[in-house]
Length: 120
Image (cartoon, rainbow, N blue to C red; front, side):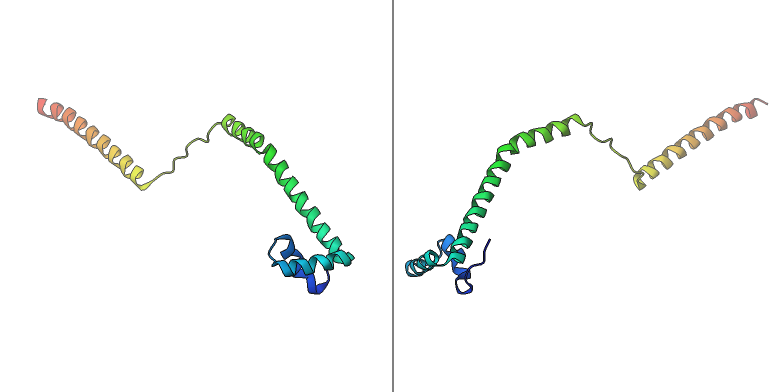
């Protein structure tokens, strides 16, 4: 793509964006008719614009199908197993269970040996 004439570089884009007032747009259009570099530059901008619009349409056309394939792939994968990490609360619960078991065992042994002691 050619470069525009330096004094019209910013105006070319503003012309495409319709950001020039009527007098400026008229003067630039007259210049573009006579200046090959600016005319080719504007044609290049037009071609790029059309290419980007076409690319957007192509991307948009296949988007639903791609989204459906991604959803299907995600649904076919088993969810990850939940990982459990030891926590302080879990440690406390385990300690309490252990103490209860020891206490229960101590009471049972105590009663068992007390009968043997009392019977002698």
